[in-house]
Length: 443
Image (cartoon, rainbow, N blue to C red; front, side):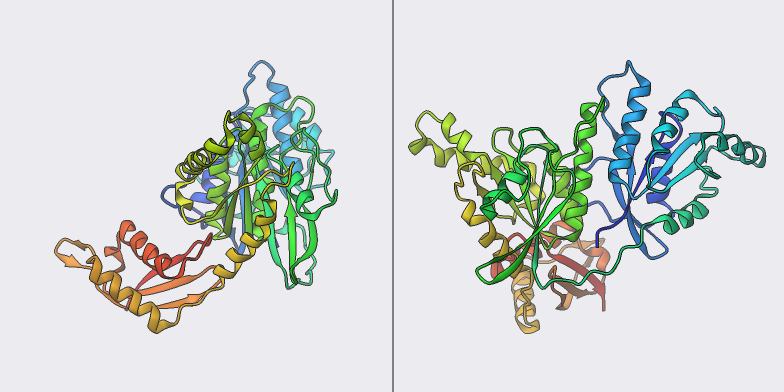
């Protein structure tokens, strides 16, 4: 079951980013930043009352044009409606009801999704009472809060929890779930169709042809597989280019449900910051991943002597991918063409091999032997004259592989030494395409 999405919308300067920071930074638990990941402040994973969800800050949009404010706020509301489960419509009690608020409200009134009208900057009793003015927007009861001071945000979140859709329990298939994600127009639906050998999804050159995730059940050499296809956001009306950042939200939903993620990259454009953005979320969710470079046939055609230069081109491109996605140095990189079928037959076998690696369990005795060898080869760090000591280790879980190391003081574990231990584990067992979780506890 994917995590519900809560989007904060509203005109500029009403406090969207302040509310976003309040929700994910203080009152809620947020997954920690992983060194090396490329992230912006578009969204964050959060938890309230035992429920995990994703908060989206529409203030993170790069709206290129500034000459039509009404079109911009309408675009934000339309994107939020398309992707969110619950919408927080933020207004400013100090400004009262404005024309910009009316424009957003007009769009939101037409949606069947839950909309909570949130009146910000209500820092005292008089301002909280003034919030009743916003009944005029026709979106129900106003919820006065102060995002800056946190007043009323707990009650607001209780309302959000009650507004989440109730999903029926689905019977889980004993199948490997493989999500196909990537920026708009990198060939996600084309790859799915090539794998299936039939037109299961609509393929079109316009980014965003596929509006929703599409699940396809199949078998691969006797192994049940569910392919989850997603696509970029559809351009509608006057939505600006910056809104395409929201294609990541559909990827987020697919990643949540997947065992293995196929991250598609356009061979003609190379790995981008948005690819790294999506990869950062894959890493946070500890999902296994295969990087698939699509449209490789176009690169080959661009080479004057393909037979001589293609290998070098491929090596250089892979280096670019690994530099941009430097926190995913353990993942396989495939070069394919969904259009011609070139090397597409390698995609599913690689994904299924990665899934097998995800379920590997190292016997405790073997794990401690690897640990002893690692410590002997490279002594643990010390701090203020106190040296880190390892007592023993155990594998606590698979899916993903999770290892617990018992030490004298977890505070002495430097990130670089944690990476060193991870590399030693991969040296012995591979764990191709699969993230490892390492935990350090005091004995």
